[in-house]
Length: 118
Image (cartoon, rainbow, N blue to C red):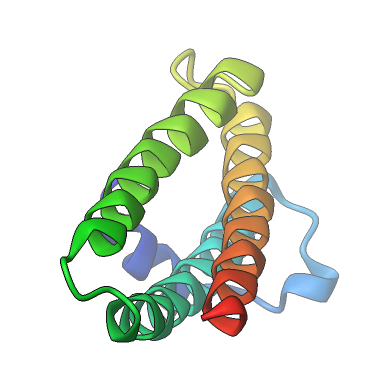
């Protein structure tokens, strides 16, 4: 799903604690994912900065970038395999986005830990 669509859904998100209709649940899931993705991007910048300080040759930074690219591929493939939303079922879409949110939060935690180690 494009970031533009996620941003549109997030901006139109209803009161999520009371959401029961599938479109509202989808919008809430998209808003939660957007928040998690923004937190990941902030942590990525902090982690990259921390790793860069200890990396005179640039090898660790390149390995971190390679790992992050592989992680994005993994996250998307994992959630798509667990909750395939291509058949158009709204619940599958919601579960797919919840999966991406959970995996993204975990990766953010991992990056924060890595930054603390440097």
